[in-house]
Image (cartoon, rainbow, N blue to C red; front, side, top):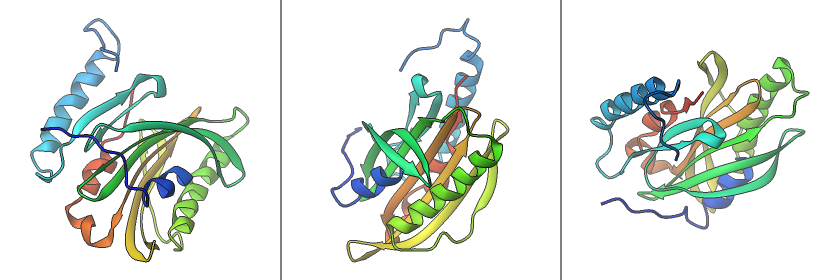
Amino acid sequence: MRTSSAPSAGLRPLLSRTISDTISDESPGAARRLTFIIVALVWLTACSPALDWRLFSWPAGGFAALMPAKPSEETREIFIGATRLDMHLFSASAAGNAYAAGYADLPPALDSHARERLLQDAQAGFAHNVGATPGSFEENSIEGFPCRQFTIAGNASGRSVEVAGRVCTTDRRFYQLVYLGPAENARNADVPLFLASLKLLF
């Protein structure tokens, strides 16, 4: 049975500080959506039985991702480096971990170099929130747009935690998927599944 819950009081502020319509068969996005659903079903065969993954899509934000429970929504002003953004954040908790997907419209003046710096600043912000240094990262892409993926070991409320994230920019939006949980939970949290699930909806 699917259950929904919000992140615990200790996890939600950390996520917040950093961080559906039916498509008819005639719609140009129908094939894209169907393909993603099929791929998602394949992913589910290898995921943790303790997590109830489901496809979450938000057409207004132009993205879809897998979430382990029905997410709650909030919007808040944040700064990533010197860039102010209105972040739309969708967060859920499961098995003692917090998962969040978010997006924000970018200021029109940001060029490709500024968008790349935004990804760097986002990783640094997550690291700062758990008292760590940014460390290494992996560069990948989504639909040809740049992404940065990272894992950070840190501390929150006196306990060891792990933050894993994937942040991406398109010409007009910033996207993020973020996992936060106790260090001992990470192995069974399906983090690679979650971070790989981000899809853009056109």
